[in-house]
Image 1 (cartoon, helix red, strand yellow):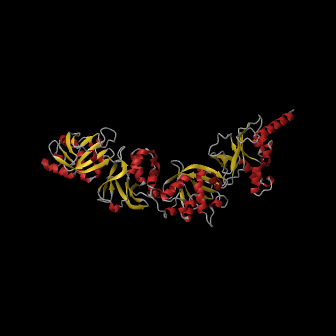
Image 2: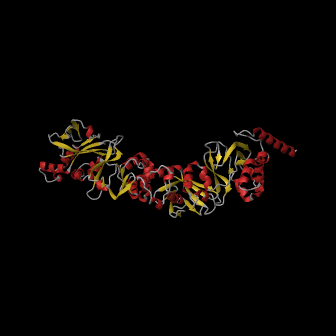
Amino acid sequence: MKKLIHLFTILSVSLFIASCSNDDDGGMPTPDGVTIADFVANNAEYSSLGAALDAAGLTATLAGSANFTVFAPNNAAFSTFLNANGFASLEDVPVDALREILLNHVVEGVNTSGDLATGYINSLATGASSSQNLSLFINTSSGVQINGVSQVTQADITVDNGVIHAVDTVIGLPNITTQALANPQFSILVDALIAASDSNINYVDLLSGTSGAPFTVFAPTNDSFVSLLAALGLNSLGEIPQDLLQIVLNYHVIAGANVRAEDLVNGGTATTFQGENLTFDLTGGAQIIDATGSATNIIVTNVQTDNGVIHAIDKVLLPQAAIDVVDPTITGLAMMTPDLSILAQALQITGLDAALNDRNAEFTVFAPTNASFNAFLTANGFGSINDVPVSALTQVVLNHALSGTSLSGSLSTTYTTSLATYGNTSNNLSLYINTSSGVTINGVADVVAADIVAANGVVHVVDAVIDLPTVVTFAVADPTFSSLVAALTRPDQPDFVNVLSTPNGTAPAPFTVFAPIDAAFADLLVELGVGGLGDIDGPTLTAVLNMHVIAGANVRAEDLVSGTVTTLGGDITIDANNSTITDSNGRVSNIIVVNVQAANGVIHAIDKVILP
């Protein structure tokens, strides 16, 4: 009776397979009680696979209760595999090799076609380089393709212990080259390997073989190469000299080691095939520090192959030997200069790396060192550059950039404008350059390395981040306002500094300040017949200072209208045509410098103190 039941099961499976063998749409169910091994054993199209499973001792595994997903090559696929590898029959394939090849078609668990997505999964095979399972690259952009070599021709053949997907090619054990070719995100890397190959070294052959293996390869994505070409002002890989390309590619390979993500040590180093070292930083995720000092993120780890392991990265790594010969843009300089690595990160986060890569425009950038950025982050309560809101970080970075090329010799003590803007307007913020002793910007940042020429401008390295200025920033930075600052900060006065530092959008900001220069205060002392500011009583000085501030308005010179304007201390009369201010005593002040634009208001310098 048991024999009759078994015969009925075999006939049922065979008839069902025959009726559905041309159905490439998948979704084939099987009768209850049929395992993966039963399906293979009772389907003539898979007799080679069945024989291979028997020879490798895997039939019992696929007949058990554990669930598996099997990519099943048909007889034609096995014939092609045997011919391509010089085997006359399955019996000629070494059993150990055959077992791993078959296991490379098996994945734990049930993965229907709907479960599969473009990315990496692990097969049950292990390779020569590691005891870890080999990776399979699944590409679902057009059907389902495995490792770039095998296409699913019929999906979702469901059995009791899993699911079978018929494939048209045996999936051999992948090497580094296999996986580079399979993943379309590495297409430029593959092009680079081919372009760099010459009579002395063939990278495709090297990374396909065992000589020097195992390899650990840090594989830049296509976007990484696009960014590098932009930084170098190049249109294609073909414009990179072959010897330079070799230097760069060699820097991405560790020979003789299968270094998986779990093997990395924070602060550890590794010597590359190129000869220079890489350093690993695991404090903020898995990152690599190259000769530029900037961090590159490892975005995909442990793509395990038979002759090594691949980790995908989001930036092309640069050794010092490459840095020494390229002609970078300002963005490129930031990427390639170890002490500007946080600036390079900031450029990437804000998207300003593209703007400062433009070789058709020229810029001057005051570039803060890493120590400068760390001090800025600490002072503002941020743990890292990634914690700064992008919109705020964008304006801070823009506040370090000027249009055009300004070498240190062409800088003078004066106001200029950065590329940062006030509020939601197109009005650029001011920078105060002081060249009386070196070059100081806004009274907070000194140039410590000048005139680093880039392909699209010049970089001056500074020792502090130039934060968005308030009206107080400029009053303190510009020595012609020293008497005004002394008056504002006199101990018997209100906390003018705190009030005038109020952020834009918070009352009473913004401010329009008519700022008397030192000569104006000197004239006032003569006019009042006193020896110094200390001779003016506190309430009088407060009333005088209030006369110079309009609260709640950012009134630029082009916005001035002739007529009466109310300040914090009383009314003044504006003559917009002649750029004068008349106080209630009939005293006339000339506006001599206009539109010193801060982030929370605007300053106009005047030559006479306004009195209430």
